[in-house]
Length: 173
Image (tube, rainbow, N blue to C red):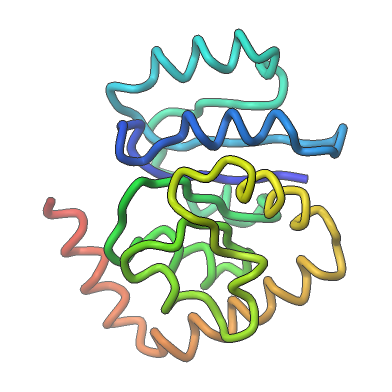
């Protein structure tokens, strides 16, 4: 089961929480792929090593082929301390991934009705995040949520031009 995180490696993106929670995912066949670069890389490398997760958590750096990773992942996870409208959630949903993310900013509006209990955790709550990560392992439940996510994002962003404009805005920052 592959979890994916795409974000800058910065304090506000809080991948430290994600790595700590990932240690308690019950599947022996688990993998966490983190795409991004930033000033927290060294801290994350040390944490991954000290938690004995070097074989299961990979820091992949900045990538130009992120789309390929959306296609191999089973679930997209953000662990940020704050967000507005994360384009990465839109991209993950568009690619049919279930999403786990903090209940902050515009994130709740990106989650389909009836799925908040599978998707949203209180900012910084490692226990809630652990529970959601383990719940995602249920294939039929995750498949159902993934389909609902894809449909919901398609309805919210039914125009590729709108999505293109949003991505361009983020790339300018």
